[in-house]
Amino acid sequence: MVKKPAPDATRRSEKSRRAIYAAALALVGEVGYPRTTVEGIAARAGVGKQTIYRWWASKADVLLEAFLDLGEQAAQAAGQDTDAVPDTGDLAADLKAVLRATVDELLDPRFETPARALAAEGLVNDQLGREYVARLLEPQLQLYVARLRSARDVGQVRADVDPRIALELFVSPLAQRWLQRTGPITHAYTDTLVEYALHGIAPR
Amino acid sequence: MVKKPAPDATRRSEKSRRAIYAAALALVGEVGYPRTTVEGIAARAGVGKQTIYRWWASKADVLLEAFLDLGEQAAQAAGQDTDAVPDTGDLAADLKAVLRATVDELLDPRFETPARALAAEGLVNDQLGREYVARLLEPQLQLYVARLRSARDVGQVRADVDPRIALELFVSPLAQRWLQRTGPITHAYTDTLVEYALHGIAPR
Image (cartoon, rainbow over all chains, first blue to last red; front, side, top):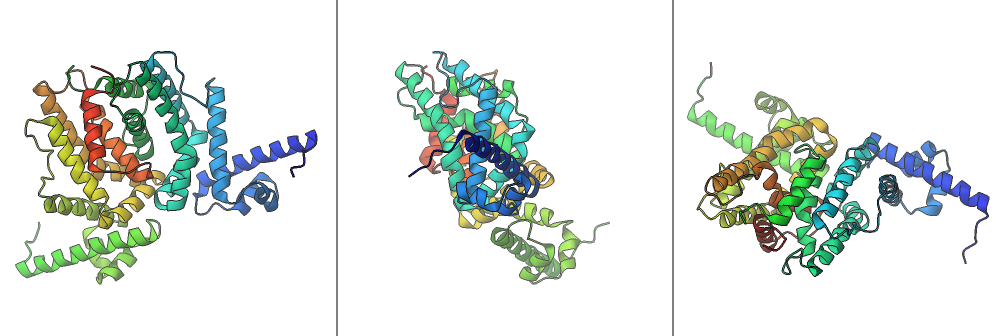
C-alpha cells in the first residue's frame, strides 16, 4: 500500500532529491567513483544516510538516476523532447539537430566531470558498466533506432541496413572523441559525420 | 656517446625488458592503474627498481611501451605489418582485414584486462589520457589516414572527404563496443561497418 504524501511532504522530498542528485554528481566528479560513498553524498546533501537508502539501493543507483535527471533537464533546457529523435521528414536535419544538442551537453562542465568519472568506472567495473549501458546509454541509442526505422519505412535508409549498427557511424565517433579526447567536438564535426554516414565516403 | 653493449648484455637486457613488460601489464590488469607502482612492477619482474628507472621515467612510460610491444607482437603473430594498412587496391578488403585482426586482438585476454585498465585511467587522468592518445592511439589512426588518402588519389574515396574523420566511421564503433560493452564485436560486425562507411546507409 502506498501512502499518498501531503503536498508539503512531496515538496520537501523533491527538494531533498535534487540536493542528493547534485551532491552525488559533484562528489563523483571530485573524488571518482570508488571513493564516492552514500555517507559522503548524504553529508554533502545535508540529509541522513537513511533518507538515501529509503529511495535507492546503492550509490550506483543514486548516480545513474542523477544522470538520467541531468539529461532530462538538459534536454528540457534545450527545448527538446527526451523521448524521441524529432521526425520532420528530413533525416539528415533531424540527426544533426540531436547531435548538436549532444555536443552542447558533452561540453557542459556540469556534465563533463561526473560523466567521465562514471564512464571510466564502467570500463573496469563490469556490473556498473552493464547498468550504465542498460539504463543510460542503450535507451538513448534506441531513439536513433526508431528514427532510422521510420526513415527506412519511407525509403530514406536502405532496406538492408541494420539501424542498430548504422547509428554507431555517427554516435560512436562523437563518443570516442569525447571519452578519449582524440579530437575536437563541434557542430561542424557531427554534421560531417551525419553526411558521411548517410552518403558514404566512396564516390556515388 | 652510446656504448654498444656486448651480445650477452643485450640478451640479458632484452630478457629483463620482456619480464618488465609482462609484469607491468599483469599488474595494471589486476590492481588498476592508480595502485600499480614501479616498485610492484620491479618485484614481480624480479629486477631492481633502478633497472626500471634506467630505461623509463615513470610507470606510465613502462605501460605505454609495454602496450606498443604487445601490439607489435600481436601483429607479427597475425603475419601483419604494423607500419601500414595493406594496399592491395581493394579498399574494402584491406580495411576489413585490418579490422578483423583488431577484433581478434581486442578479444585476446592478454590484451583485454590491461588495455581496459589503461583506457579507464586515461578517461579521468588528463595527462595519461593525452599520452595514451598521442603515443598509442593516434599513430594507429594515422595508418588509416594514409590508406584513405591513397584510395582518394585513385578515386575510391570522394575528393571532398576528410580521411581523419572518415576513419572514425568504422574505427570508433568498434572502440565503443569494446570499451563500453555496448554490443558484440565480431568479424561480421566490422565488415558491416566498412560497407556502411564506404557506401552510406541512404539509397544510392
